[in-house]
Length: 278
Image (cartoon, rainbow, N blue to C red; front, side, top):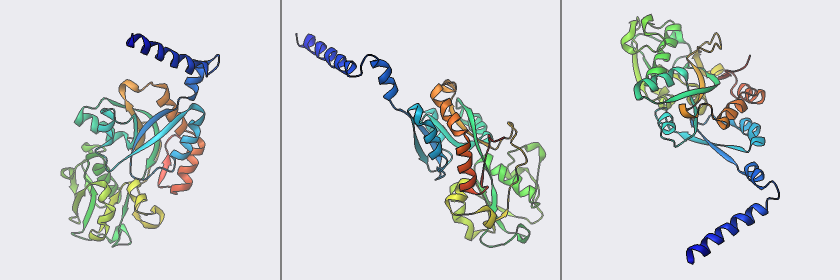
């Protein structure tokens, strides 16, 4: 009898709930249910997500930003189901993570290009780097390799072309100034500036530290094109099983809007470039 009474109570509760929604009860429930999408980020670069959220209001989708301390965490969190998407990395970094850790993750949309520039508290020009100076670079393979390519473009070193976009220190073929390279976690690079001749710093960490490329960079990375095969285009990433999920594709669509691009350009002054603009 107790079980029967409980069953009736549940039915009554459900019936009253549906009755309160009118004739189209089930549809109205779906319309008012808010879908929360957890997006993993690294750093404090969140200004562009304000218009993204505005673009999603009519879809009843709410973005919840989950911030991580460094680059080693968001892909694992995504693979473990702790977050739904992440938006912190470029294609080369994701490919390396997949190769090393076997993640079943895929990019589902482009976000921006984040310049990797050389900053210094001790010299005014890249030409002022002298014999035996120390230069700090990120300690992860893809950003560290990219940093070496930037320093090659600056004329300080040359690296083995066979290493492609991700050379390592062992791939340096010519180092005429005998520069000593200090490899540290990317988020710690700005704090190291007083102790080294220069540091090659990722865009988000430079921004968080208050560095302005036009004023503070002694050498700026140049990006010649926005071609799809550019390995340094930042991306929104999902689990492979969710790559066609409508809600997540709506997040990408909301990001790739003109109002988001405008915020990126106006807020960061060229530090970040919308990767989906024509």
